Structures are given as C-alpha cells and as structure tokens.
Image (cartoon, rainbow, N blue to C red):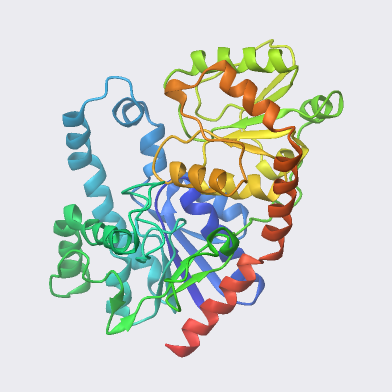
Length: 419
C-alpha cells in the first residue's frame, strides 16, 4: 500500500503525519508527504519521501511581511485580506495541483482539513481517503462544542452538536479555486462548500484523531465514525542535547522549562521580566526555548537559553513546564510526567489549556495580556504540590500505554482492505 499525506501549516500540522508515515514504512508500506518546502529536510531526515506543495504557510508566517501582517506589528485587516488575495490564495490553488501530482500512483490519501482539494482528488482517483485533523474539530459531537466556537463552554447536547455546522463553511471562501481545480485539473463538475465533508463517492470518510482517548473518555457520540488512536510520538532516534545544556541540567536543581515554539509573545520583554522576577522569588532555575517568542536571556544567572531542542530530551528532566498548549507540545508535556502550566495564544490552544486544567493535568491556564509575576510564582509553587506531581505521573503512564501509531496503522490497513 502506498499512502500519500497531504497537509499544510505549522510544525504541529506536519509532525503527526511524519510519525505515522514512518510507522507505515516500518510495517512494509510506502509513504509520501506533500507539504510546504519549510519541512522538506524534516520529512526526508525521517526517511519519508517528500513532494513540495506551493503553499508554505510556515514560510509566510516567518517572513518579514508575514510577521507584520499576521503576528502583530502594524496590523491591518485590509492589508491582510490583500495579501491573502495576492499571495496565499494563488498558492493554495497551485498546491491543489501539487497534491494531485503527489497522489498519483497512491492507494490511499490521508489529509489535513487545510489540504484543500484532497477529497476531490480521492473522488477523481476513486481511492479511499482518511481525514486526520490534529485536533477534534471535524465530526459533530454532543459532549462539547466546536473548539472554534468556544474552547471551554458547554452549551448542552443540541447546541454543542449544532456548532459543528460551521465546518461546512470552511471551504466557502476557497470554492472559486477548488472548482477551478475540479474543472481544469480533474475534469469534474463544480460542487458546493462542505459537500464532501463526510462522504465521497457515496462512502463515509473515516476520521482519525491522533489524540489520547483517555482525555475524552466521556465522549460517546463519535461512535464508530471516528478513531481516537492515541497520540503519535515521533522517534527522535540518536538526538542528544549539547554539552553546555547537559552541564546546566546536571549542576543544579531541576529547572522550569519554557517553550512557546512558533508563537510570538506580544510583549516579550515584559514577559521576560515577570518570569525572571518569579524565578528569583521562588529560587528556581529555567531553560527557555527561544523559538519565535522574541525573548533573549544573555548573561542571566540560572537561566539557560537555547533556540530549540527536542522536547523529549528535556521535558522529563524539568521540575515543571510552561508552554503554549499546541497539541504537539501538549502531548510531549503529558508524556514527560511533569506538572505543566499552559499560556495559550490562539486556535486550539485555549481548548487544550481548559481541558487539561479541568481534569487536573495542568496547574492552571493564564493569558499573556493579564499575567503578573505573582501568577507565575503561584504556578511554580503548585508544581511542587504532591497532587499535581501524582497526576502528571499517572497521565504519563496512561499516554505511554495507548500506542497511537500502532492503532492508526491497523485502522488504515482495515480501511484500505474494506474499500
């Protein structure tokens, strides 16, 4: 079986597909990933075939123009819309042709909802496809609303389920490009937005969520339509931390690890000063993964700054973890067995912050805009609380036992054989 993965977005939108592609290869199948050029080396270094998609959302966000338009600065809604019309939308249209080229000769498509045209390609090639969003946002359930509507409220079964109707409109602004692709590249008739959300060629589209079933054990309304496989953890192989970081870890008490990954702080210097104050007040050390946060910590006593490092290598060595709540980082934090504090920014991050705190698997959820040093001081003290330490170890053992990749491979093979 040859499986093509179609995805666009940030590292969190690509890494689960890389992990699953590697697992499929290990079990005797072939895999290819079509995504933005930013991730070419990442995909290939993991032994997976790569095909370039024109739309590289990560490169856009990291460009000077992208930072200005989408990450603050002189934020202007009209400039953002103009940029989308002139740059993003044409790249999306070209990516559909890239997805099509990558899918030829494949037996099954696994796609991110951002990968526009994926289901249309499955329709044309008459092959099975599986929708695999990193977060539980597609299939309507009664237990909680669409996280795009509310990350924390419960409106009751009827309204909760109704909120998922917005997914039908997700394609609406791109239908001009999708139908152009259907007409010119696939020679198919036009369709409406949301028409292929749950079915294609008269068959249900399976949905896989690469998340922990334990965190959603109260949800019954996914029924047999959705596989909750367990998290996908990428094998980090022979990765090692450098000598300076190793020395810092070994020569002192366990540090607080801070990682906001690709999320930029609105006021990095303000947050930095509050963090320094809280660390000094509680006599704690820290490792800060700079990422795109905007912070720098030159010559700060008891603070080690590093651009980036695999979370697996340092999270488990921490006293506690502060992070943004992206699903990939959240999964690694849960796997570490260490108490965590989530400071969410956007998209699904507030959802995970609320869910983990409500279940006792984080010490709290804070927002950058109204966070004070005493909030961090309280969180650092809570990280020493025996209950939070016990809960962190409990969820670590559960997450380790779920075997998400193995479950997903077995399910994919079943879908292919029964098509």
